[in-house]
Image (cartoon, rainbow, N blue to C red; front, side):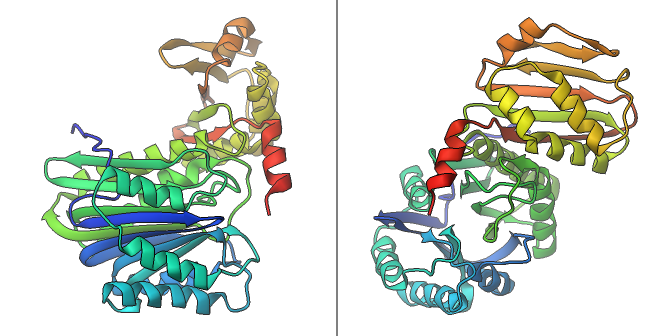
Length: 385
């Protein structure tokens, strides 16, 4: 199955998008020419932002539009649900659709209410500039960026089937998704139940495997809209959706706040899959491991030590290796002995680093993505308000 990336983000045929930002307040709108079958995955945090509550109900009706704002998270705000409903109502009035068919999302500082009058004005302005192109998708994602330094988009096409996505996310990112908003569109008709299953499984393999700082957000939202215009085999759709979500997950990890390096960490031959996943999340969350990567320091003891805090291991059975790009993998630890620190040090100079550990204790495996930890991360979050 050969996929092509059209570069159009959410703007596949039948969908339009745009976004505007004025000062610290931004608005993005995605609109479908027909009511869509919809699936969603939301934060597991017990403290849920108002838009998460509203969208969780509205996706049951199917969505035709999504509206998202940046600048205020609308989380832990007394009248937050009313403001989220107002955003849905304004968008619905603008496009002549029922409010129950609008998804809503917010990102920004927790505890700050949506500046509803400013957001409503931006909804009107944005609606008048909607279009179907790569540029329009780019405008939409830029409007909801906060501490992100790069817009994140991906799209896949196979025969007549398309899946497209845009997302924001850079910090407050833990294994259960992230401080992220992700909006996905498709023309694949696979049925509502199968579409929901595909999204849940895809999120588990991508966004739930990303770690920047280990903090779980109140606003995480992934929405998938299908206009059902093309029949599609379930297996084909899963491969396309996984391609898009994994690409977006990697883009998010690489753009972690203050990050200079993308880390891909893989565990093979663990006791079982759940154990492998726990080890991946633990290592990618470790400040000691992250700072070692930032300092290009081949300190393998930090990784082995972290693994041992999660799972009982025999260090003499472990093989730990590093690679980057086309460079051949170099073992840093194997058979209870240290490896070539100098060669690994050269690999650590790269902007994308792959670390693989073979535990030689079972059949479980897992891969996740994270980033290094720099002084800039501290500065960004010390000043963010």
